[in-house]
Length: 263
Image 1 (cartoon, helix red, strand yellow):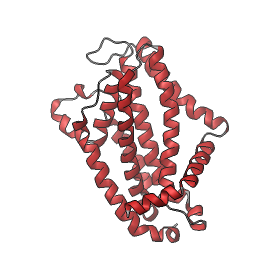
Image 2 (cartoon, helix red, strand yellow; image 1 turned 180 degrees about the vertical axis):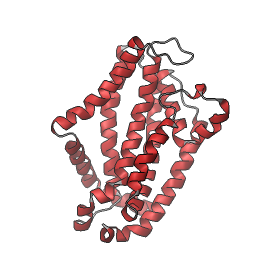
Image 3 (cartoon, rainbow, N blue to C red; image 1 turned 90 degrees about the horizontal axis):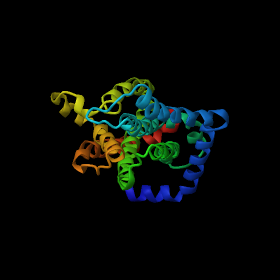
Image 4 (cartoon, rainbow, N blue to C red; image 1 turned 30 degrees about the horizontal axis):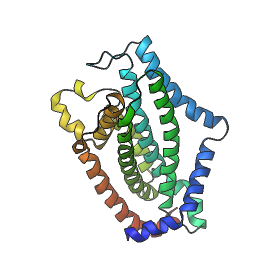
């Protein structure tokens, strides 16, 4: 089934690529597109320059003036990719309801469209972040290669969760509001703006059970400390992705025939 599904998506690759292009163009049309990139660039400037020199914020255990700003950006930008993918995936069947009713195409192609569009936006902002690290002499170097599998895992987590929530959201429209409420809590339970070592040791097992913790800390270590990930720390993320992905596929196959009628 998975092989046949993948083969069908490959046959629709042109449709998926064009939909990603149109979605990216629509989201970044006119002045909206300028602000979509100005805002994250302003965040990078604030965290790396203002936090470092004006507020003189320091990462615990580090005398590097730029460490805290780079630490935040290395966690915040991937988090925004995850959150954007989950939030848009949750609404994708409702958002594309008209197309689902009128045209015959693989519904799962919408997940690739949403994920691809979010990833394109992320790559552009991430490149500016890397330029900022290079400008202050903190470019991560060869360990930047570790970012690739970590981002693949992050996107897989977001896509699996997004597909499950998208199906549920068709039948339970409060799912979108629930996710909007939960996301801020998940943000602060992930070591994005605070390092894990400042948290009491008794709380470490709880925080490390968060599937995002291992991925975010690995990204921060690769960018800031030029350290290769401890791959064993990523098992919660892998387990979450597998379990959520299986549930998403099961519910999608069960309820997808009635999506058009419900929409």
